[in-house]
Image 1: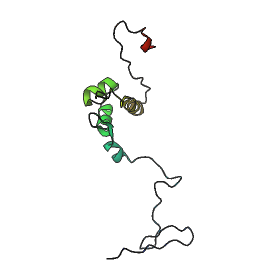
Image 2 (image 1 turned 180 degrees about the horizontal axis):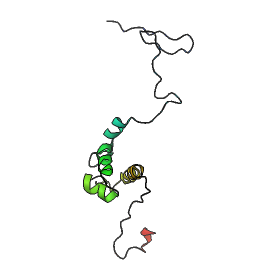
Image 3 (image 1 turned 90 degrees about the vertical axis):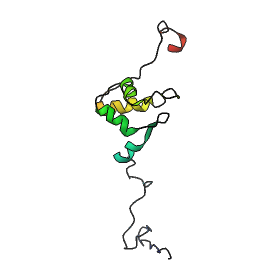
Image 4 (image 1 turned 90 degrees about the horizontal axis):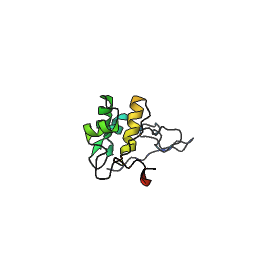
Length: 119
């Protein structure tokens, strides 16, 4: 079976569907929202080391987790072999959901507060 030939609008040159209506604008069209739909956003992997999805982290934050440590304890996000490269995204999620400004905790061993690498 041959594929249908799509006509073009004489005014704009846009492709027309077989019923004569223009196709919806593409995602690269200026002025079209680039926001990811919530259902798709929840499926996105935040923590690649432990394969933790955005929706899982969102659920524990909405359930009361207010710190990165609580999210880590409940999901294992931020505890992978990479050393927690997803921590900034988890902090952003906590801030957006709870309306706060969270600073990630800097690990320090006793007596190392004045070390050159802690400054």
